[in-house]
Length: 598
Image 1 (cartoon, rainbow, N blue to C red):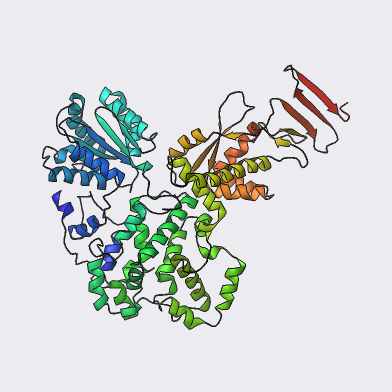
Image 2 (spheres, rainbow, N blue to C red):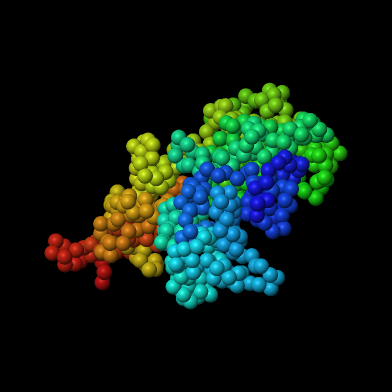
């Protein structure tokens, strides 16, 4: 395993290095020791960011607090979360610290793998546990580590009923489950530590540090402005002098522009915003794929000579690839983010918004082609671009440089409020808590107001239409608004358990409820936008309900937000007759009728 941490300059092309980072490639950042091109390993290892909370836990376990107590570290999560990368780093650090008793058989970096052709993963896991569990129970012997996909753990411990076979297995399975309830993903027992990477924070949501964290640190690894830290620097320097396409190479243009730290910081904010509004599952492998896809032009791999010094430049020079404005960084950022993520992904693009000032600026650019080209530094593919494409590119360029007053989704009041709620509900005493609290208060008020409007409030009254079980074709049922309050403490606890990015769990206390169970509002940014529209008079359509599980869930709980246990009015569809059932001051029901009921 020592070869995983070798260093040295790579002879690979810039193109091949970035391709190695994309999904579908057979490489991993750290930890994959089977079927890998070891000449690319030094590059991949330099991408590793090792100053995270998770790395601190690894250092404590394998170095700073190491004892021969037989403890087992289990790193759980989904594919691409970085389980094997972390465990490999921990193993190597243990070796470097002189803990040679931590041997390869005690480190299982891929629970899906098998040692022989016909061995099943279950057999390999059992072999591993047979090696380490006795020491863990006795509290003596070398420490061990396991990286396992949580879905695989469910299959092994629950579906295979392995947890029922022994007390040791049961303890491990309970610890894995308990880790999903921890806000930091860490659960400890006397013999086991479980780190669940599904709870890993990839970026800060605080307005002062938005986008910073692991996300920005990984982006910075691709910046050739920092020679000691950049694994791309050697290839970029070598190819910049010899690329046959010269200034017409879109890859070198993109990497050169990406060298600006402020551009990377802004891209980190855009990516974080995209992740919040789409709710897309995001992890280190996804970040690597995203960065590589943004930097690489849109060209088929099969059309390139991979052995060339610069495959992209070679194809451009030979006339096999003609770059367009869509291949340069400013457009790639938003085009890649929009791929396969639905309508919400497009909202992060500044082109999706309109304003009088923006329209005026665009009109002012008519006939100023040379001015736009100068501002963009005449990127590859721009000479033949249509004027509309140059304008689109310039707007995106200015937005990512924050050089002009262009407001995108990140600058809207709704996103500011939503981001504040994510921050305040997920963190204890964050900076500027009072200012965040003001925005969170606005969000809570809008949510409650929208629920009231959603429920069909009758104009000029405090009565709400509700449906219990099934809608009646002949009558409508009305009650009074229950005026629920937000249980902030419970909302914090439930929001911190969320593994879906950008999800907020608002818990409402209804003073009229008898079961004292809170009403859960599973809030997403898309749903929050819909709620703002409801406050402006919009009525959710059948399409809204069909497309959102959260909308369906909320619709089914509207009646619980009313005072239906104390007051119900039944009205026929023509409003010609009605009767009211109301609880009097002694708790007895009273009935009043209006209209003809004979």
